[in-house]
Image (cartoon, rainbow, N blue to C red; front, side, top):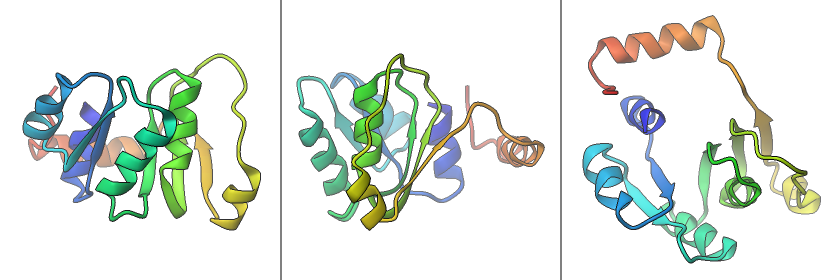
Length: 135
């Protein structure tokens, strides 16, 4: 939830993807996300289509993958628009297959991140000091 608040404070449009319709109100009204997609009972294709629909029908510029599930990684990459960035933070067990042709032709970037830099920390603290983030 903190990531959504930081993204909004930075002026980004945020599409929350979570499990369970009961999270919709929290995402849209408390976190002020621009859209919400419930993954419960949906196929990977349905989740990706929902996110793309909320992102101009093309896909998101970036995704942050926080769920420790391989399906979340697949969705996080598939929901990207051309030249989009997916950042994996969660650590699911197993291998993560990538559609190489689509990744290359659409120039998608997939990165892993476990810690931020001092610059990242300084920027985060500046945003928090403005009162834009509540824990």
